[in-house]
Image (cartoon, helix red, strand yellow):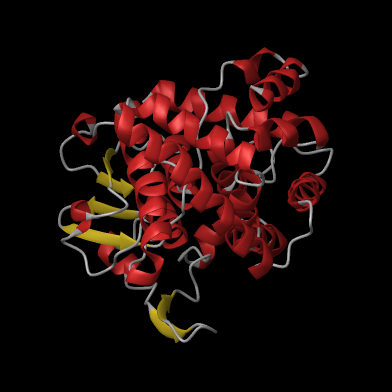
Length: 352
């Protein structure tokens, strides 16, 4: 009740556009889960609360763009996602803004059987058919490749995707992962580049802030939405209510999931060297973004959002309906920009 009261007090300070937000609970981004006898309780709590809970909630709340609405021969898209993953939210924001119809397949974060066809085991995955089926991995690669395809008619989508080769690297923990070194580049010729980026500084700025959203902003989400036991419980209370759980499974999803994610968020806080009050890091990052946009532009892209605007918006909106989001709206200068982003994407969706 205390969390709900505070959320409503914060919401009361906001204009009417904020009060209609449907609310989202935030879950692990791409991948996740774990096993092992010594970690059985924590693993079960995370799997049931942070996995199944998000899956069922998203399944009941799912809205869909139908690729069948596309004219014959057009680009047909299917997005495999976790609804509350910020990287997936980035891709949806991009597709929605560009008026690209697509189907959504919600992936079960525990079994992931929906993507058993893929050796790449993370989300988002985008299946694209522009004459022949093609799988695109990594949110920023997906966005850059599809944007290039929309601008340039010189190459097929398959040729464009080949410009983003995966490179195997090893993390500090010794885990092998694939990276895409040029994933923030659009593969355009000189004429196309001049049309989209009249001066080189515009392209450099967009790439810088797209990378910032992936490398920094996204890591502030979990520590903030699971900052306290109360906030973690409020997040999972939403999951249980929207997921329509039975009494027993609802109990486990709500309480064990909240406990697990509260402790996981503390590990993330340490890993990313965040302050004791992680809200301060969130506020600072958001105000840094607003300062970069400036007072004389509606968006970083000028009169319309660019890929950096869409990336930042996609990451932040997974917190909607939670205390962290309301606090961010009250204690930072993000609200006018965020409202403009909502409006422009809603207009694009309505036009599809």
